[in-house]
Image (cartoon, rainbow, N blue to C red):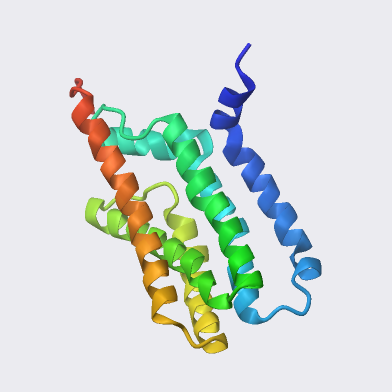
Length: 197
């Protein structure tokens, strides 16, 4: 019998998709009286969970990377994908929502910029490879409108400090650089295998 933690690593995306539907259904109740800026920050998490379903259902993202980037080598394993998405998306967004509500709405830019940057990477990869990648459709249809609107609302609601802007940009770019560095370090560790087209 498979270890429960291993099952979580493999099946987390399905729980996340269902949780996103629950969060969206509760949004009118939970966010009643909130500003548009705070609503935008709140919506990043469930929208990201929907994006993750498109991206990782049936292990699509890992297979895409291993085939088109790794050329048969493992770029990101199941555990790495689990940690990146639960820690770098779910946990990060929970912390950002707390900061935006309890400290200052300007901290919401962390989630907004990170999500926008992810969308840009999906689109840039699709253009460069001339191929649809897992997560591209929700990046265009959900991420771009939400993050552009959210960024506008947050900037209108609060006079941004240089620190908030710098931290938001650093987190958005830094997270993705860490993932890229980890992925390419995997390629160097694993020898190239025969890759049949």
